[in-house]
Image (cartoon, rainbow, N blue to C red):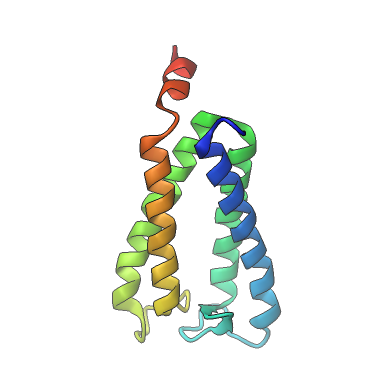
Length: 135
């Protein structure tokens, strides 16, 4: 893991998103599963569905980071792409009835920043390791 930026980023982001998912349940007591206005976890809005999504993404990233460079690169790319989409679409969802994961402005910034880091590392690092794994 020390020699692979993709594995390192996947492991760190996976652990952080798992932690955020767990901590989110401590603040969402009494919040509806699909509530459009969530409870604040620091400055980020969360509801139970948002917490479960964080747990799933965190688990996928952590598993990939602990597994292989190829899997880490793939999962970083997939999660980065999803977060890019969520960050952009989230800009239009805040304040609407379609906002079933209780996004707020801080969430959108975090999702876009996560997308930039995950995609940046996935698309620029570990090219030689993945090429040799395919050979």
